[in-house]
Image 1 (cartoon, rainbow, N blue to C red):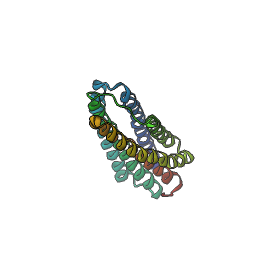
Image 2 (tube, one colour):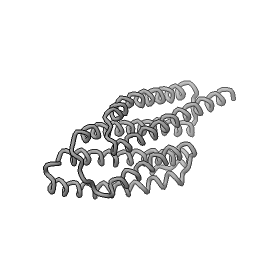
Image 3 (cartoon, rainbow, N blue to C red):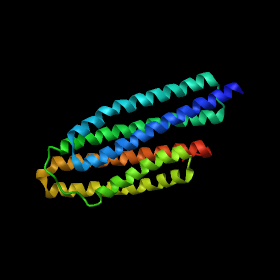
Image 4 (cartoon, rainbow, N blue to C red):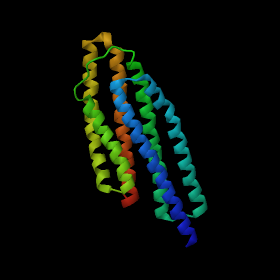
Length: 215
């Protein structure tokens, strides 16, 4: 019984660690999105530099997961939760990587002439943001219904990105002098779509933890 209590306490600490990283991701993502408008190079550099924090957080959480497995002899249900946490923190770290990737292109855009974008670009970004924030919330609340909503919403971002690629290609043909800026936005759109994919992965792992179901 004492060992089981120790295991539960350590698992609770682990979950709080993941929630902390998720909260930091939310803050970073908002900085990234706001900076798409401001194009502040100092802020972009700060976001890129801060990616090291997420890398270390992923490493530390994975290490704690492995230590838990080696020292507490988890049962089958525990294995499912621990393995899912390791997968989720990997997805969260990748989202942070893409925040840094977007910031690199934002820095390049700061040096380019301002260009006209498809009017739904902001909508695509905002849908992705909602998915990320919902994924953090549904992890905290073990909310399967919210997880399913995130998975369904991924199609919305996919459709936006497909349309965005087509429209950016057209804008490049119409404005060849701005090809560099449009290519930067195309890459940003790609990372927006990838962040949405990783949010979907988190949602799927939450369903696996709660319901023992894989999508």
